Length: 266
Image 1: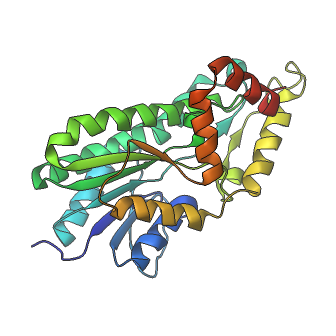
Image 2 (image 1 turned 180 degrees about the vertical axis):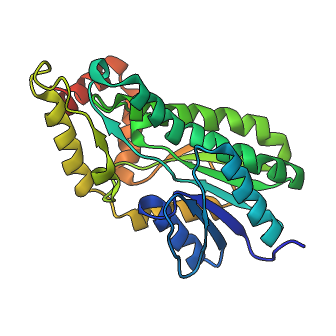
């Protein structure tokens, strides 16, 4: 039997943007299930343990929600982390882990949910990407790559799902003040060879993040995108970041790349 209320599944909801999304959705009367590796308690949401890199675990999480509620109307993919360092000195295993969590974690979760949404003929999928997916950041190359991959994934997925009433959108925040900054896996290797530019770049980014937007604002934006009638393939959170992404599309790529160099790589 279907639930009269909308039901949402949020990955990575134990902190940061994911927790903000959980709070915003529950405040709007949505029944929310949250999955993450950390064992947490939400006053108004149900926690289900799960690791997005484990496809079987995501299948079990989705099955549990469907057994209890009969439906999943909204999927919000927030799980992720960041690494930093120079490409030349980054361990390929670390780069693969970055993509395994940020990109394939979304792939595993979406794949588990899609059969239900497609057969039901409705559903909304929100994937938390980043402005770095549109404007890649030096010395955070693999993080930027993972987010750019999500943007392409969502854009193509939308057209595959168009006949079935299921819509997907990539949500691109900019700098957000969350625990993501302290959790970043930083590799200073090669900093001397690169003239101290690695540590300088990461320090600048961390400063911007700590002074960034309140995650509650991103959670409210995710709620709006989850509940509105239609959504674009990708949308940027915050007027300033919207303008930045728009300029990056309008201006010559060489100019945009040079400006990013001045900010984060010089």
